[in-house]
Amino acid sequence: MDVLRTLKPTLVGNIPALLIDNTHASALILLQGAQVISFCPRQGQELLWQNPQACFQLGSSVRAGIPLCWPWFGQYDKNPEQVQASFAHLNHYPAHGIARDSLFQVIGWQESADETQVQLRLHPRQANIGLTAEMSISVSTRLQLTLTTTNTSSREIFCSQALHSYFPTSNIRQTIVQGFDNSTYIDALDNWTAKIQRGDITFSGETDRVYTGTRNQSNIIDTESGRTIQLQTNGSHSSVIWNPWIEKSQRLSQFDETAYQTMLCVETANAADDHIYLKPDDAHTLQLTIGEPAP
Ligand SMILES: O=P(O)(O)OC[C@H]1O[C@H](O)[C@H](O)[C@@H](O)[C@@H]1O
Image (tube, rainbow, N blue to C red; front, side, top):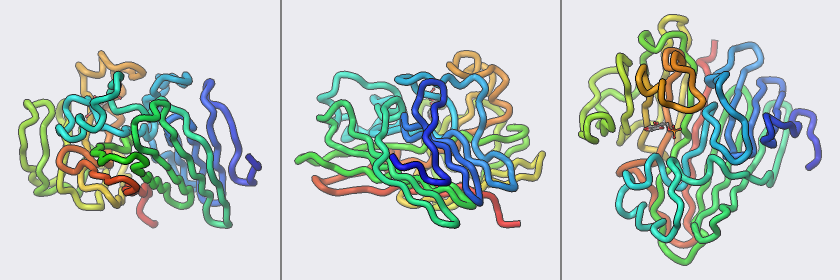
């Protein structure tokens, strides 16, 4: 690939990656899983959670930044029946699908005075998956991820997915997530019971919920530092809110047992009832924009 002024190939561990450094921000993107692991506005602080325990080993999923869950979210057998049926012919069902440890190809790149963009494409190793994923990443004052899933097969396919974003916070107990008031959620820790959110989301224990019918704007407010991270989404009506808290943190790979105190996941998804239906040649676009409020 031609080397642009603001985009350079690099390696993180033994994973091929791209480093973007332009007027507005810097970003680091693993070609494995099209996974953005850093986004830092020029005059600001890192917007993605930095994990000192992350292991950058080609072929293994990396717990950092924005892992891509595709073409199913979470445990395969917890997915809607139609999603499971769409992939019933496969013989391997890793949690969160097959994209996060697969290499993407760089298929395009552009830069202007204000923005650097790169387009990545996944051709799944299992050709019979019937879908392709293209991720376009734009780095400017904000970070924008646009994921297009296309049905390249001759059958109808149902799939689920998520941009499994890890965000930093200074104290999870003093963190609130706005934008989910009156949304229904499925509580994975209470036998997948449906509940209704009243007011903002707060954290006082392990949290693992799929919110459905969600709107396209939410805010993470770190009340201890006064920092707000804004999320804007398109093509998604579900979000996963996750914090492993004390006990699960002790069992997780690539995770310090105290790390739950300073991170949370707000995952832009098409999960549960919000899964995607694609006829042959149909495409679906999921978009996430992350930034801080203008000063
Ligand atoms: O450990 P991983 O496979 O990366 O999954 C991490 C987490 O992802 C999602 O948020 C799920 O809802 C959780 O149940 C899961 O524990």
